[in-house]
Length: 303
Image (cartoon, rainbow, N blue to C red; front, side):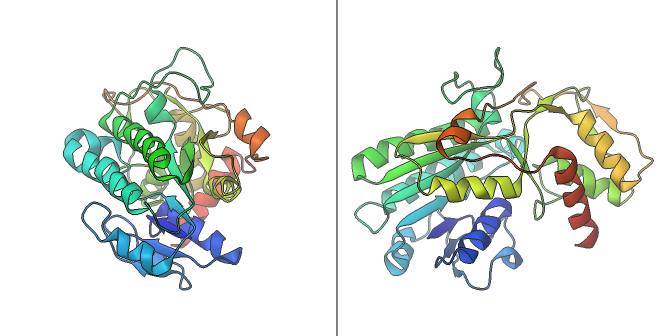
């Protein structure tokens, strides 16, 4: 198995699980946003940039039959301030990976994608996999383009694929100082006694999914049907202000949030229907939002 972005938040957890399951695992990561300390000692590291690195040599050397593709620029705000960087990483990097898998040992690619940024603002909730795709940020456009390129190249080159569209993933190893991940960011700031900025009035609704549930979905997706797409989510909406209130209580903070102007690229409401994943993958989220936030706060307290 190869995991691109295996030094990152989600990727490193998938690597750990694969190794527990007994697989030989290699990580492809340029360590630009991931953390070398996240990488399991039993995994082989290829420090490669997907945009301009020699992906083909790594695949030829390791001979994986399956690739978990998680390497990406994941910040909506960065995609706005530097859309070229976003497209370079998420579109061109993915394109290079898909091409490098041609005529190799690779039989399948599992792509980690995004629900909220791809579906955009909708009129009906929860969103289904066949709901209209209306990205309102460069990040959403780049992730959708990565999906489409995978569909095309899988058809051209003969390997299989599964696409997983996540809700808002959170949990241990998500950077509290990053540009994405409101739960880790809020918890990190409040634990240090700092104030929190909320963009808009805090009523925005999101579908938060804990990291261990996402990892389980990836493991089950290894045996998913070809050309399958699944929402990996909880079917439940939680507002940003509810998230803040939960974290404030757990951290025993006395700080109130500072409300900032809403960002144009922020979707107002996104909830994903996970019924297809529960039926076909036999997958169900196990960690509710209160428990997941408590685990995340405990992790940040101790790390």
